[in-house]
Image 1 (cartoon, rainbow, N blue to C red):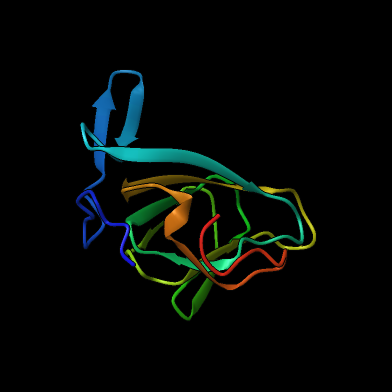
Image 2: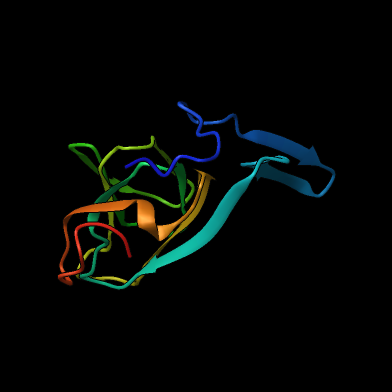
Length: 131
């Protein structure tokens, strides 16, 4: 079942760097319909390996050490790194056993709802689909 009821970009939207006299800011979505979430993962924990039919996600890493899986590729990131996760792509966020929690700012494009989740692996025995 597809939960795509709103447009989902097939590629990472442009990120604008806006210069100001005091410095600058990056603008990840400008007048686009999206959902923004701040995810925190505790040491030794990880999200389920999952995908979504109704949204694509841009993850902006806020803390060094975040481990991100997109498809079969697993990479360790530094603060400021960005990861584009297309709709239907398997992905997961993890925090190493040692060290502080890691945070990722998620900008989701499309229809954000937990009903569109498919879990392929889950450490907490949650259902394979839905919340």
